[in-house]
Image (cartoon, rainbow, N blue to C red; front, side, top):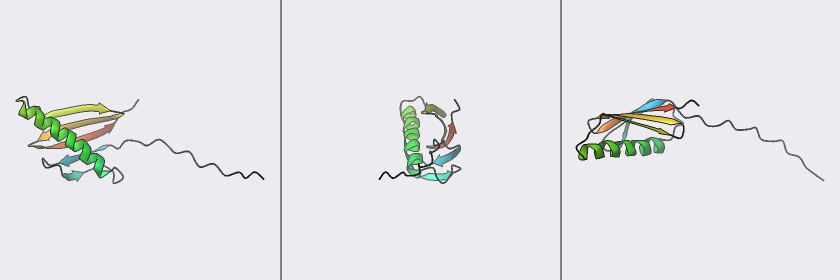
Length: 94
């Protein structure tokens, strides 16, 4: 006897969040406007890369005050805040 199961509903593609967060020079999240569903580990990973890039530029004697990158449908913009940074995440519209 053949048994049929009801198909699972299709999942909608995940959307990137829109918002910002501030990270200290030590790498801790200070404040965030991102949705609670956005993983804190992702914020910490993005923040770590931004802090490293800003610090590296300072160490080379070519500091910059703003960092911008596009990554897999997500625009990341960051501004230096005396060792820490404020980071803005914006989904890309295609």
